[in-house]
Length: 316
Image (cartoon, rainbow, N blue to C red; front, side, top):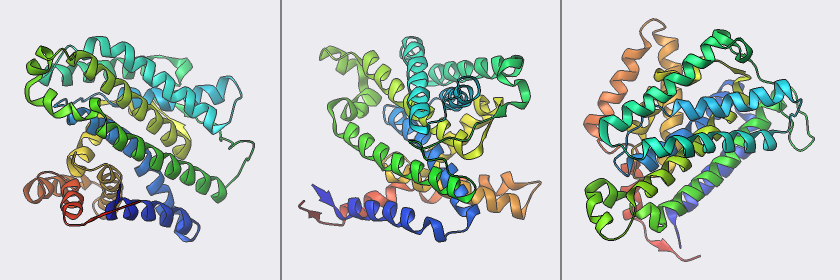
């Protein structure tokens, strides 16, 4: 079943892909970073729906980014799709292993543990010369199934790659929300003891959500590394995780599309704020967050939800 909202989303992705060559280069670059970061926000939405608020998603984001950088630097492999697969798998493995610890905790303990794990990686990156230390290092230019663009053609290729994967990720996350594991998020948040009495392992459910969010964050980090062409330890720092939390508050958890819209709005507002108030741009960002909480307490996603409720369902 497809609603008018679904068609609108598909048309928005198609329009962005078609009009990209005519858009200013700065706007294409900004949208590329925004949509790459939206992968992390999608993972946060999955966790937030279950009542979990991590402050360490930068851990998986940095793992994905450093994975593609290290592959290009030490193996000579440049294929973007292969590097993305390795980055997503690396972040997923770390999330799977770390999930055995994180899935046992809730509330502030969960948040602080995830933050601690992220800061451990930050410390390792800063102290390791092989990994570039505080300066980081360059990311090799990727190829796309043998196609090796340069200049603006490369920026467009990366944008189209990010856009295509964003559409796939949005569809898969939406399908996950409709699955049994996805729909059990609210019961986990409200009263997980009842689920345990029904024979459902809440720990396993949360573990699964952690792995999915880790894979999404790793993919986003890899895509951001392609776009920026550089990695550094700040990708694992707590302020990076805080930025993702900011975007999740702005977007809300009621809509998949809001993760991408919220991420784009955040990057756009931040760019404008830095241009207007270079020394105090955080004031503008903080004001935007305050206004969002006051007038849209459920985030931008609540706007999409209201629109969806008012539109009839269209048969396929």
